[in-house]
Image (cartoon, rainbow, N blue to C red; front, side):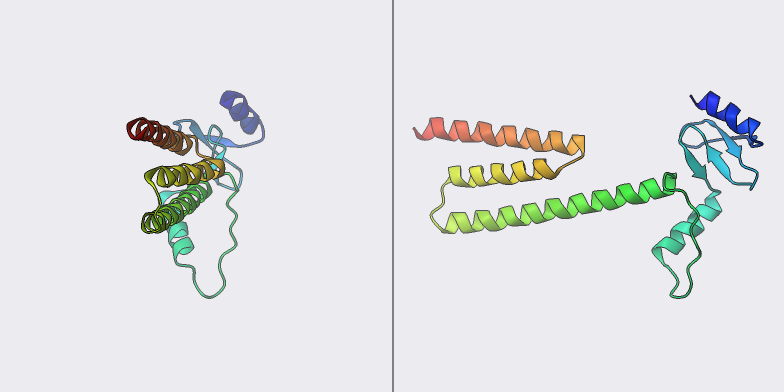
Length: 161
């Protein structure tokens, strides 16, 4: 698929460069405006110096006029920034769930709550987290935790009956 796209761009006047993409090792293309592009990643490629300046400007925007951004939505920098934001949101969500669990556990233990109620409450919170989770690996981790809690509940019932 990349070969076909390379050919199409060559016919449109683009130049194939000797440089390769640092992500997928596909030959880079340069458009007539001089911008580098990776056909395989479908992303614009910037020189490290320009990339570092843009990252710096994103982290520390000037209070005056900010330069107009001409970076396409699907470039590597934007994808990394978006994935970092998603990770931060999920970590914050996990912290909130953990804090709620600790709060609920403290309340339950001081209010004549039983171990089964605590485990059941934890299972419900994990169910909510699983319902909101979009990352497959994190979902698998939540399911493993739920399985362990179910095993604990079954074991506790056998021991106490």
